[in-house]
Image (cartoon, rainbow, N blue to C red; front, top):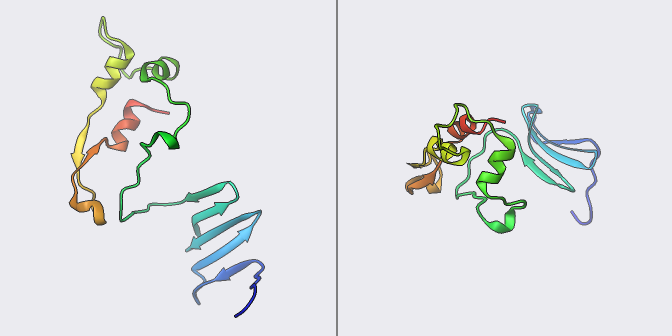
Length: 130
């Protein structure tokens, strides 16, 4: 096929209608079984649901961050400890004691053969509730 192909509405990729690509309001979505899985717009994109990757995805790079502040400053403005700090403790030292660094292996993917270091997200949510 030469030239452009223009489709209005949605493009259905299987006969049962379970996989489709839709476009509206300046946004393109990849939909599986009625639920959006990938959304892309002029501003960026989002992954919906649970995803896995064959390589590590990290956001430690300074070039990807803004508003970097010392931990003590952010904690003083935004959190209240689950339990009161002991006498002489600061909020920062209490929070650091609550954190549990772990080593782990990913369940699947190319990185599953490597030992990784970090935190468990569900445990961080208990220490830093939103």
